[in-house]
Image (cartoon, rainbow, N blue to C red; front, side, top):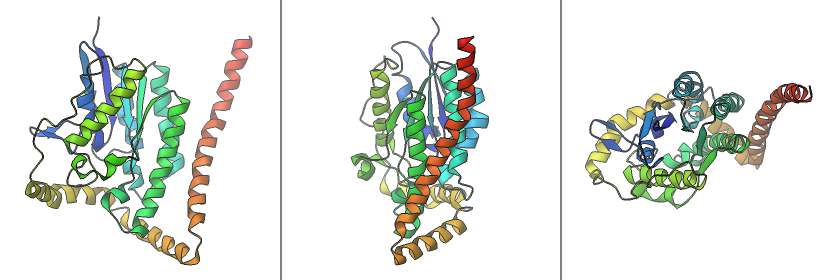
Length: 290
């Protein structure tokens, strides 16, 4: 009997940033892997720091499908919100293709929605609100598509864990070891409910001592700052324009228009996916009738 195959796709969160082991990262997916089965598990982590939905669709998904996984996690979208090219229609279309591909192959799909980076970084309101609006849009799409494809879905965008500093690394964007373990535990519980995780859950308590405050601050001032800068440089001019627009609407008392505009864009993106599926559904119905 072959081992159970678990493949993880995504960005730095799934790569394990914030949970250092040796010279690399471990992270929630690796912690979860041992508990996916009570026997051998083949775990492959395809996640790459900085990845966007386009990277998952074009680079990671083909490699993952070749492995014919029993379980695949797809946790992605935050980096899309940090780019000036953000387009919820494109994000929805890419995720739809990724989810559909794994579903067709009979893979148990694990997804998650995530907190917005502006709030986690503690940005001023005028800067944080546009990012929050984008992340809410991504989360709404992930929720809808997870339901459409019967994915096992973790709602990680809210909860006490977001404000518990013990859960987070120095950069405030990635969980520390305790936070990664919390994600792994919650994912294991959800997979176990559908019979897709039959091994023991990961231990909740950290294996290694938390980094000293001085070490965390040094990482944040060097590698951590560079990490944020690489992902936000192209967004900054646009974000400043978005912030100015935010302040104008706030001064006029018309901030609700921005939320309505974002909600309408999400609805249109999901409606476009449904419309694109109708011809296939009609063809399938005709074939069944024949």
